[in-house]
Length: 560
Image (tube, rainbow, N blue to C red):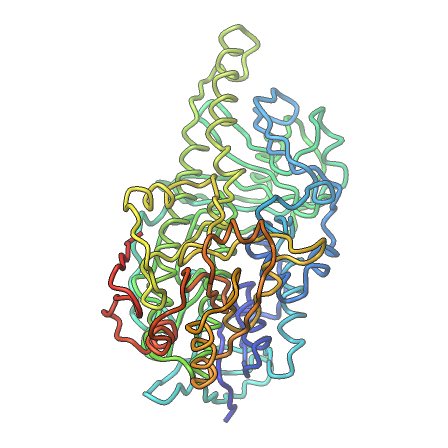
């Protein structure tokens, strides 16, 4: 019998992030993975800005920046008929070396495909002595009761079956999650969007075979619209071509057929080595539960999204961070059942938001107005190309500049936050729909905003494993009592008195209490009159239907 606090099934980026964060917080974890850790088809290549903030907290930014992706390679998105045909438009984007963090964050997004990013997360997760990572190990099943979970696992090398006793079990086992299926959790949404085929191929001189300026993503538009994309997997010699397909027809391609399509995309025959082929189904689906008892699901097991937006993995890592601190709080003994229930309540609206946005990007990309004249050397053809280029350039800006999808995921109906300020449901809905315009705020449920306190220290650097209270004025007796009550209840709390005029303006209130996941739990210009009631609510000891404030009757909890 193997004993651990948390058993994680699946060692993709979400499983490794969850294991790493739990280990970083001092908890024992066993992760099992059927594969051997090899990545033949990197399913993601964008590490979003919020995920990079988590990497900063974990101290692994330098590892991400040191991976093998060519950091001088331009990141332009290019729209064209083929690479030796007409360029229809281009969204210029800087290389990783030239891009700088925006004002809203100490970090920037990174181009780091899964075959590079997974080893970084693996190194981080296995750096904790409390974590065991077992590759080539099959998860067979589980039984749970009020006290824990007993799972059976099998070594694919030796055939030996073992049992794992854990307090909690988390399925990070992907879109076809065995754990989700065993729990009978339903997925809802638009369902199948396209049958798509990915081809990873090697061509050392690919960009020398055409006359276009290099780009990260080439989007190919023909007479029937957008039919394929080619992206630079390592910025050197490896490329991923995606045949977008439709939801009506499932095609199986031979290698020769795939090479013919690649030649069509280039506009000329060329030598290429196909490294791997992956037929897959693009879908929009969200789970209707994230938990049953002591068993949870996380990442793609919770939500399936089109990759048009680069948000799938990043949303899953957001799930992992939310779940990690909550499991840790319960394991440490200071949190209650409602905290675990809040995982679904907080994260499912984010999954719906992300999946709908990503499907919208796919729709915009596929439904650009096109015509058989698009490749014709004529005035009519020129007009078609102009219209297609304008439609893609304008329509897809929301995908290229979607900062509010990464940093603006606010929890507005959480049972473990205290909402004391009445807000308009209309403004909440507008904020929820807006993909681009992120407005930093310390409103309850928001990601705590970034301000540089000195040349190297961000406000985010003060946030770690504990609750954090930012004080912008001398503390009153109520704040003193809040600290004493936290100590009495064994709730980890760090207090920072901040003397920074920019931060004071941005954070807006004298006191801002931030959760271990970096989201604001409570704020005010005076301390709570009942600190024990406040802590009970924030740590999940109140009943799930009790939405009143711990210290004010003026509470409005808004649905996303």
